[in-house]
Image (tube, rainbow, N blue to C red; front, side, top):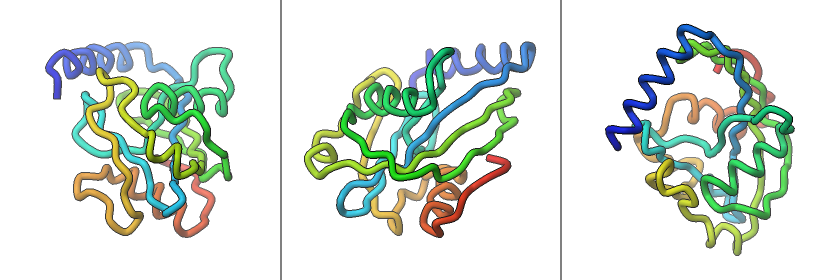
Length: 157
């Protein structure tokens, strides 16, 4: 993991502890035709995660979802299936609300998935839901279990 990303993360954490901002975010359970899920490894974190990010001021949740998928993994043509859940996180001293979407991509789009932002994303990959990498984040595992159970997730991240 790049040292400058860790330093930026520490500075952001200090800012969040002082300001206690409310943030909005999106993540996606992106599935290909073989029901494999797309996961990313960020340059500033140690686990595999669902792709996604923050919602900008004036941007809709769907707009943020589509932008983040383009910026992180070069997916442009996604079909939103449903909302998996809405979650609240108090980690990192933020008041964070995250909407998780389930989306599908075609085989052609899945084959074209790549690291679009090489500074932020270290790795991308497709994984079977029953064969996730050992270092998949606990929250990602919980979201995927909720998706698999066709449950609506609410509450704490």
